[in-house]
Image 1 (cartoon, rainbow, N blue to C red):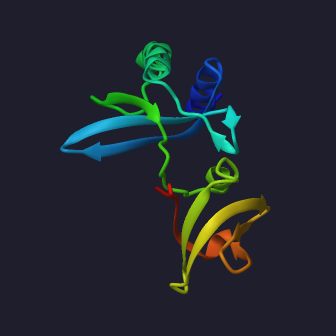
Image 2 (cartoon, helix red, strand yellow; image 1 turned 120 degrees about the vertical axis):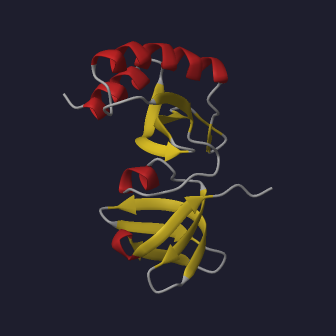
Length: 149
């Protein structure tokens, strides 16, 4: 099994979904960042992830990474919620964000803002104020979820 699938199994053991796992460098420090989201949906929105659950997950993942480190050298493990506003970089990210507000910048610089309705193969469908838009995933330069205050 791969590191990603092993981490995914640990995340699912606390009834969460793995959103992303990545190695980042910040302030000359290497961080292995595990971002999770709740499986539970309430009123069309995903429930939040508690700090206690993130701490519990950290205690599950940390010993595993002692045996199978994600990088060579020193690093810090960071486990947290993917957040209410997050980057959408993969088809899986889009699928996990159906029903949420999204902002998309296409390769041709056209901007879309609306509710993510569905994902079919590489097609992303969002309901804007005017119409249902279909955007090919490969034509997206940048995308994120956003919260309307």
